[in-house]
Length: 287
Image (cartoon, rainbow, N blue to C red):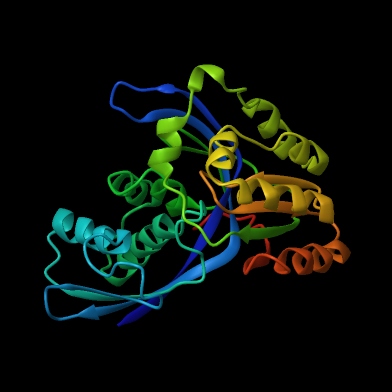
């Protein structure tokens, strides 16, 4: 039996860091939403008791370092599954981009194997397992739009933003999330107004959403990689309504309401940036 599952990327409409916790992680408050740039996960049941991972991109690990592998292994161990699975990951989401590609692959693997192995688990059950794999996995299990707190693993679903276009642009660099957080001086940042963003989303106030985009990690990433700040400035210049870096970067996204502007912004960015995508918000969570 074979199952295919979509693994959509996420963007951060806001990202705030409240303080450093005793466990070494940072306490965060983030509003995340999914977009329709997605990897595809193909799951094929094996009689042999093993996990095989194949990835369309050669530089992505295909062993126990891969988060989809870890997701399958967690389910096998917890529910004493004696069958195996072959996992093929068709990558469309850029790697190390601040778009939660690896986390979404893990979440899609959890959802798909829940069906393939007829485990009958709820999304809450799968999200709980996902927190053991990575901070963004729980959100990716649910999809849609949510407020994430704790270290990012406590998920509170909220209303979806109004539909719009999203332009994504990633420079040819990778950013270490751990390095960005290590350099962040929490006592010196200007915090997000998370409740104001939630209120704008619930009112379907597109301008209010654009006005309240805020990511406290931007300044750190910009200081390390000035080309990320350059992309943000150019995206604004080309006419995006609201622009922000996603996660710890390096991907920058622009929200665009009018379709007539999409091609102009896309083509302008493609002049100096290879990885540019024009996608839509995904308004609905996973069922």
